[in-house]
Amino acid sequence: MNPLIRVMLLFALLSGSVPAAPMPETAAKSKPLVQLALLLDTSNSMDGLIDQAKSQLWKIVNEFITASVAGQRPEIQVALYHYGTPSLGAHTGYIKQLLPLTSDLDKVSEALFNLTTHGGDEYCGAVIAKAVDDLAWGKGHNDYRAIFIAGNEPFTQGRVDYRTACKRAITKGILVNTIYCGTSAEGIETRWKDGADLADGAYFSIDQNQQVAEIPTPFDQELVELGATLNTTYIGFGERGAAGRANQERQDMNAAQASPASLVQRSITKSQALYKNTGWDLVDAVDEGKIKLEEIKKEELPEEMRSLSVQERRKFIENKRTERDSIQNRIDQLRQKRGVYIAAEEKKNAAAQTGNTLDQVMSKALRTQAEKVNYTF
Image (cartoon, rainbow, N blue to C red):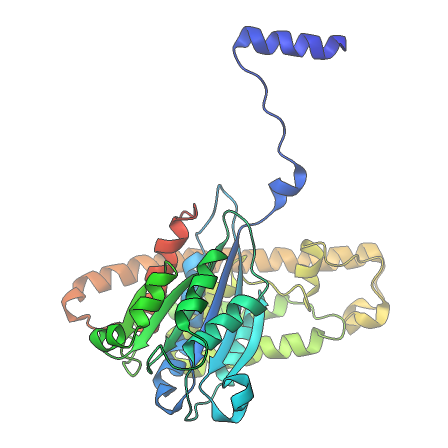
């Protein structure tokens, strides 16, 4: 035996412990995943549901700002389907995948704001089966995988039995949460609760036409201004650079049109690690190791960087990163103050709060279920 190993073993025996094997580098670096598939009914009566989804997307995402598993922050991915639209054709089951699981949250917002409603048949079992089978679900022990399906027709419609689809989901570790747009009793009678029960999910009923309660705060204006300033720290590159920057600004405008609070929540999201744009932003791409500055072609860089040496490019990016960090830190400080202010106002008006909205039920389910797979908030 190697003398050094012999000495180490002797020391371990005398001290009463054996040194643990080092964690493999790949395991240490792996991030827990939060994967959410939103399945939204887009039949005629669901305008209110779609409006709630548009206005509350950023608030829902922000539930995971403080989330971690053993100190590791998760990556969040969202997929989007709509169902119940006749123009999609009977051969599709009136179902369409708008987005696969993606961490590009601006794309999720863009897809939501492009949704419109039409009359049609709503096949819950079929759309759940599509989401279970088609999406690239993770397999990590600490991954939180969940489907949220919302609608107002019987859960039993269509050729695909909802019971089969929900059981298939939970065998893959995917929870199915059902959100019935109507009274709780109606949702139970039309089997929405049964679908959730079969896949270890939660059942909720909401009023899709209820106005989401929003509490303005003294910090909102500065948060909005900082969110706009944050955009100037992004460096578009390659084929997707210009389009990515344009879409970032477009989703700012969409959030503003949805509601003042939605734009504030979006600013908060943009200050967090949950918001990444590695596909078009040079700062994120370099930070994540997606691109090497010495290999990128000059014509793929923005005009102001094309004449710079590799070292000067690094400095340029570092300056933008420093500026971004400063803005994000300020936003996070205001986020915490805003949270305290809203909590106090909600406590004052607790008796006046009635009914459920999409953001309320999703937030409740997300936290409760994520905690069961070792997330802390």
